[in-house]
Amino acid sequence: PEEFGLSRAYPNPFNPVTTLRFAIPIEAEVYLSIYNLQGREVSTLISGNMDAGYHSIVWDANSYASGVYFVQMVAQEFINTQKLMLVK
Image (cartoon, rainbow, N blue to C red; front, side, top):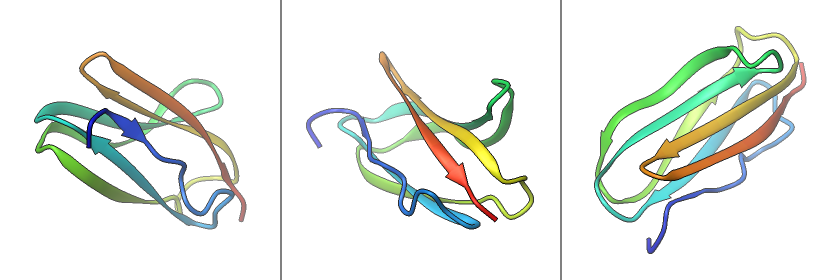
């Protein structure tokens, strides 16, 4: 990849599993976290150094309540936040 990117979660809305795909052009510290509507971090999916390339991770939200959540990716100066809808 030529630039950092966070693709749209698929599926979204979801029940109870969604896949998050992202790209990093160089080796970098990557943080991928899930937040609730109150802004509280409810899950840390990735926190650490990752190799360049295309990656994906599955979020299993089986233990979470239905509602709106946000996924945020932070890598170097790149920050991207997206809305997720969990429907049970």
